[in-house]
Image 1 (cartoon, rainbow, N blue to C red):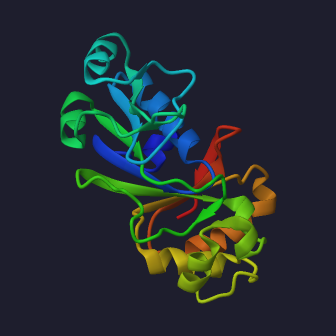
Image 2: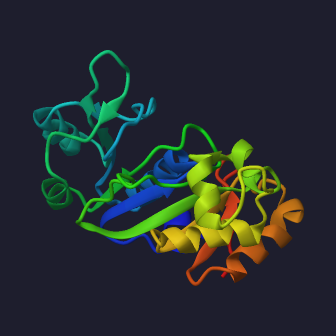
Amino acid sequence: MELASLLDIRPGVTAVIGGGGKTTLLRTFGGELAADGKHVLVCTTTKILPFPDLPCARTSAELEMLREKHRLVCAGTPVPGTEKLTAPELSMAQLAAMFDYVLAEADGAARRPLKAHAPHEPVIPPQSNQTILVLGAEGLGRTVAQAAHRPALYARLAGAEEGSVVTPALAARMLRAEGLHDRVFVNQADDWERWADAVRALAAELDCPVAAGSLRRGVWRRVQ
């Protein structure tokens, strides 16, 4: 099954948050949906590097032109002095009117597999109809300090210490405390036999749909 179907990605705006594979998840969704004949935009509400294999619009005029030629495009406004892009010039409502699907990365995790969100995060568009949280399996079994972006906040929300080992129950407590997600995708579970018990234990603690797998390998499954 395609991952977009497995996670029930609907037309309109979808926000992706968390750590351990958000950008790759966006690219996977986008490729699947565009292959089904939809017009798809990938973008950000914070900052993101352009997708090297996609046409990328940096102005609204360029976006109009690229949409006519391509099913899948990225868009954003250049951040001066960097190679990164921030939110596109057009509003999220305007983008949603132009594209069948708008997939927006809504926070950053400093390349950590786990993430706690500060009060100003994530930047979820009001037009978003769902929020997918990515959790990197490689964060399980490591300490909060090793695995999490904003470890002090992560530990506080989980009722733990920064030196505590991240168990499935601890990770689930943090996710429930934040309450930001509609669905969870556990990435980095390349060796399913190794990760199956931990992923199932995490899913059992969450009251939402959970899928898991390896974006790198292109394999995934429903957990609950």
